[in-house]
Image (cartoon, rainbow, N blue to C red):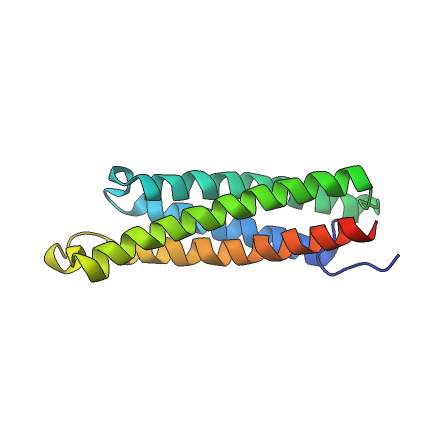
Length: 154
């Protein structure tokens, strides 16, 4: 069977998982370093979602490293089904969290001009965290589509 780019147990999968974990961690770090984030539910949801994403991606990256080291094939239908469900759940949660946080920051920036009225408010950190969350989602979206196509081909 031909290896699909991003399929489990390959270098491309390891790179995707590492990217997901790194950007999710960066999003958490930037959001947590901004003062007052805990006052807004959307931002707390973003941190929780990115935390789940980082844990899921780290676990699968470790599995990819193990597979590459031992040269094991991870194309088992049951295992790939688990990857599909986990990837789709975390992808939906990550996208929902990024979109809800983006909606709040658009409200602050453009609708009520909250960021202009209070320059000490860390809007730029919130924006950076949201951008990192969308980058994380693009990686998990790619992984989830690869896993779904791999499951369909098994």
